[in-house]
Length: 362
Image (cartoon, rainbow, N blue to C red):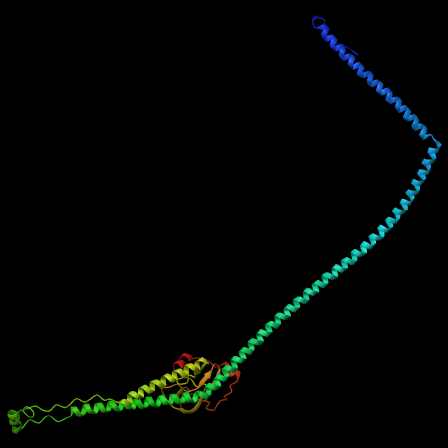
């Protein structure tokens, strides 16, 4: 070991430093000696333990115990191997069982899904059947309502057909009253003109005589000379019968208008006939006339009005048809036979509602 001493150039500081260094070295040497003693003691103790271990290992009784222990361990190992093999076999069986259970579960799941699909399909089928049933019920209800409405309209038409003669009576009364009022007005006008003509054709006044002039000069009686008695003005004709007849006709006209309005609520309107071309589905020809100013096969007169309810004819219009003798020979003659009043649906479909506005105004 090399020792580093301080330089002797500084003689004043050398003794204290060397003393301190030698103290440190002494302490280190002491510690090293103590360490060596501890190592030697440990080595001796280790040699004793090694010798004891060697004695323990070389002891025959200990070897027999170890062999017995090893035999037990081998037997335990073999038993453990058998248990492991049995456990492996059990695990194999368990795996096969799990596989079978998995296949069974898969089949169950597939069957459950199929069952769910069948249930869903059955529910959809039931829902569709319920929907079709509801639609059929609604359609049946609608058909029943339409049928009830048709029956009600038909009943109204039958009732209105029974009341049509009353309307005919009203129209006949109106026509008669208007004709009588026209004649009465013409007679009154003729009387007024006769009075005016009689007044205009009166003889001129006669000049007063001598005695008349003297009487007027003496007593102021009579007329002045040269004056004639004026004719009194004709009073205006006052006819209470005419006024009452006009009021009565207005009342009948209101009743007729109300009657037609009630028929219109049931879709019942008069059939347009006069001036129209003859149609055997609507008109009933009662005779023919020849009028040069009207087209051939047109209605020139209506004997009795006809009425219809939509496409159903309640009563045919009885008419007079114009027939020109110089018409074309190929033209089909007017069918004056009475048509079947129970018109077929094909005939009813061809009935046109032209002139409905004119029918309402009639």
